[in-house]
Amino acid sequence: MIIIIYLVSPWETFHRHPMLEALARQALEQATVFCINPPRSLRETTSFWKKPCMWGLFSFLRAECLNKNLYVGTPIVWIPGRWKQWHERGSIGWKIVSRQIQKTIQKIGNKTNKVISWIYRPEQLHCVGLAKEDFTVYECYDEYSLSHIDGTFRPEVEDEENKLLEKADLVFTASHALFESRKKKHSNVHYAPNGVDFKLFNQAALDNLPVANDLKKIPLPRIGFIGNLCGRIDFNLLEKIALHNKKWSVVLMGPVEREVEKDLNSLQQQGNVHYLGYKPREILPQYLKGFDVCILPFKRHGWNEHSNPLKLWEYLSAGKPVVSTPIKEIETLQEVIWLAKDHEEFISALSKALHEVKERQTASGIEIARKHSWDDLTCNMFETVKKCLDEQRT
Image (cartoon, rainbow, N blue to C red; front, top):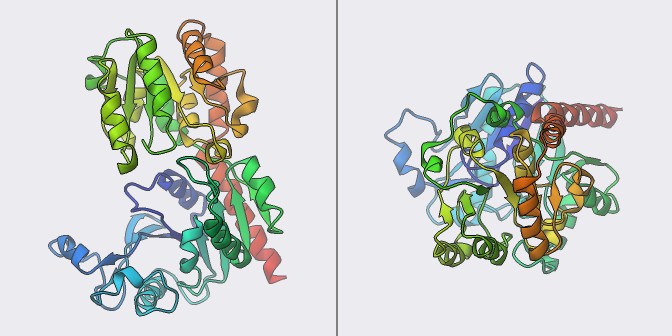
């Protein structure tokens, strides 16, 4: 079996690559996981020419082996002017990408292997068919038909997703809310919640892990957020937190989307707001170690309320108290986290989280996160894929 994963962004920055590493571990000696980066144009690949040959230029891409059964490759659309058109099914660019993927499948597998395509988003509809797959998985982890900025309905995205649902053989959803809506449109939908690299993030709960040096310089108490700074973040809430108590340090970390650059710059005018930039995943426990409270400061709209935030499980693994805006998926966790319906409640919850946290509460959070380890969750997902394939054969 070969599982072709179409990444939304390059492997290095794709937020779900810990999940894919775990999936490959569960599939060891049973399947090969081949992750496809978004294609590049020939001009974009010039920086790679000086490296050992990783790319098959005109015939096929070469897959870089990251582990025993985990490969990553980047297709190249080498005909000038065709790169932007590769997402148009049947175009010259699309055929170039398809040929490279199929050639590489032949190199890392054999003709008897079943080929599974794994799609993440409606705008990847054009990826269906690139590998001439036998089976298609659609993993839905967000409410794509709504804007992540303000929650407005996007009918064109819903139409595209409906077409993807028609082509999918199996659908996974990351939240119960997504499960309930997708099962009305597809006969084979399974709940598969988000998880965490538990061993990595649980290091923050250990006494011997040092706090990152640049975080040590920031005064206590520290209220921290690690994640993508984008339109779904409530910057008005962050400003109110910073203004409420100048002794509180608000620490933000992660990549910044263009849509919120002005908001972040304005927020940093507050002397107790500290943006530390993007940090590699491997050292994030050193920062979580130094946070007193972790926050999920999301806007209240349909996109966020249907989500299952990855960062929550990282925070809980680290043994940290968590304050969040309301999200349906985590309403059952109110014994270990605080949910605040408005800005005033959020600030009140922060005060409680800073002063009323009990060791039993953080220990319970750690045990809940342990059950959300990617190894356990991807094992269930892989078994579901195999079961559905067997049912398809019969």
